[in-house]
Amino acid sequence: MGRRLVALVHADEDLSLAATLEAPGHPRLGEDAGLVAGVGKLGVPLVDKLDVDVDVVIDFSLPAGTDVAVKLCRERKVPLVVATTGLDQQQTDALHAAAEQIPVLWAPNMSLAVNLTMKLSQIAAEALADKDADVEILERHHRFKEDAPSGTALKFGQIVSRAMGQTVHRHGREGRPGKRPHDEIGYHAIRTGDNPGEHTIVFAMLGETVELTVRATNRDCYATGALAAAKFLAHKPPGMYGMNDVLGL
Image (cartoon, rainbow, N blue to C red; front, side, top):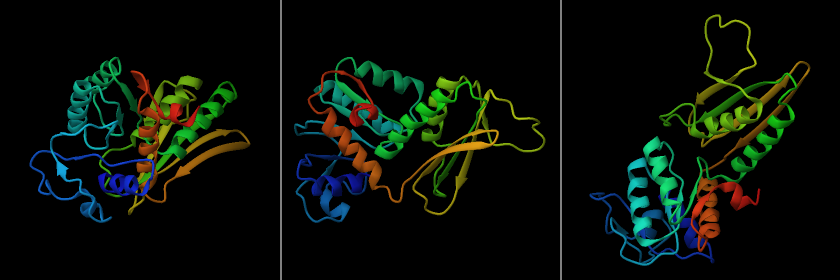
């Protein structure tokens, strides 16, 4: 994702790459970020400390990297886009605390299409809340993904359950679980090949079904969404923002 962010920033005439941060001890520290990303020399080296002024920081790393980004941005009063998933409660609380001092945009998925589908799922869930509908969520990702179900699938479930009231989140089924109750959402995780991400939310009643499907064909959609978030967040007042704000939803 770091390489694609560098490449897409370079291709965007409205953006300028100011710095690229890596973890201390990374073997490629000091190398030109453009050469690492395959877009030619940009004159911006990979560094482990920010020593230039920036308008906004994008964190697309690991939870430990988010800790560093939050501390850095709070100290420098710089807007922060967080695209990292897998944060624990303490890290989530730290993000909300930071949002009292700086603008923070945090989303479990940066894809514009995914976030639009989340809004459509909310509309469907609210419309079908008392219409005898079962809800199942299917997600597909590449064989290297370590967590299941995806954070995005769980977010879809939160949106649906908030509108429809399901209290049970069931991860797969086997044996003889018996008649399906209405108070559950079923999650099914598929891991195949190099699939960059696909989610389907099924709203099924007797005699008819509505399915909302969103799929990525490559990972650039996540980087593009993060850059759209950065453009939106720069120069905003302190607060917690989301992709719905970027999309005007």
